[in-house]
Length: 513
Image (cartoon, rainbow, N blue to C red; front, side, top):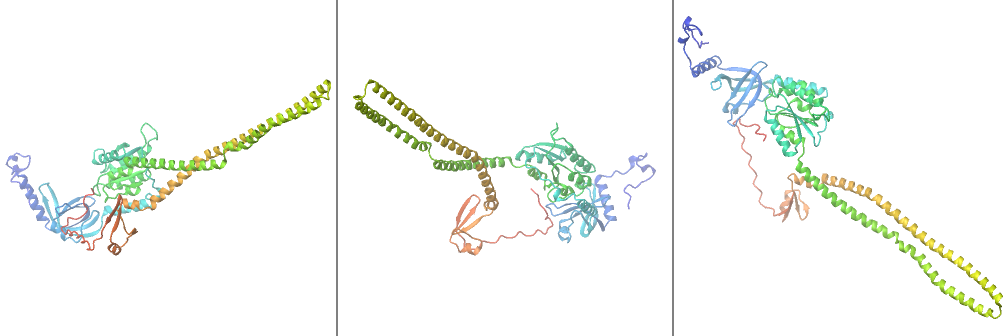
């Protein structure tokens, strides 16, 4: 190997008296010399290692890392080489890469230009991760039965994340748009050696808060971090973090990485969100939708109460007609009293006339004493009849009044029973109506129409195949918001062309957004 700093003599040593005579290299000269040395010594090499971060930009080149437990080597496969590779390197794979070493002077780094990649088994990190996952799963930490339901509308939400990243801003923004809630942030490191212990302490710290204290205890926890490589997310695979998430008494949502990233905390959490923004959407409902739904329910309840009230009022009126009117109950006794009272006066007058005639006949035969005795006897007789007639009339009137009072009390009792039974009957009918409404929403097809489907009918009957649709003169298509009448086309529609497969190696997952 050539010496980049050849010494011309004792005075050519750095720091010696002849330092001014040493050759001064330019940056480009020195970088070129290093490049020639590395490329000369490592013309063609085979490197075995675990694939780390993989990047596939739109240029078609393939960038990835080869690593072991002590070092990381940057690797690159140019567009043409990447397109010819039989095995595409994926994160976590252990591969044998064949290529040549070179340098990149623009960043003062050395890298491997890869020509071919061969699989060499599972990577060490992935093997260790799988072993840890199986161990924790055997302990029951990932059991679905121990997962708690997420509260529908939490009052306080605790977020465990970095306070300086874009993750917390996305969560707060989405919560503010959907349903503003009180948020407590526990700042932690989201990668590196301090990540795992800080995240575990944050989860335990939120659980240690006293409900109703000066610092409110969260009703829901969100552990969030943006995307990254396996090494960046490794802190969330540590056993201390997984056990803290599994032992949390507060329901916990895991939102670590992007949708394709999977960590062990996702298995222990009560709910996994594909992204931090999705975690905020899962945490709270949309306030405007809830208000609209409540307004609709209130309107429907008012209509149901009105209909039920009208039906009960009509039923009560029908029952009241069967009871009869109080006036009708006392009409007969009143009529008998009037009849008896009308007959009493003529009877008295007739009796008086008869007695008077009899008196006149006897007047000539009776002396004053006999007349006085007779008058006294007749007066006693009339008094006796009067005393008997008045109590009889009083008893008849009292009996009529008692009959009317009993009928009125019976009517009041029936009305009270109806008034007491009406609310319970209304509640039972309301519960049955709500149950029927839930069943209707569950089995009805209108919810399916809202998801983008349509119902095709011909002559009022559903059409389920293409032949029947082509034979019909007119078709009626029902969408979510209405129906449309169309005429079937006899010519078959052109089939959409499949997009050409990109063989340049620039495929892969695009942006999640």
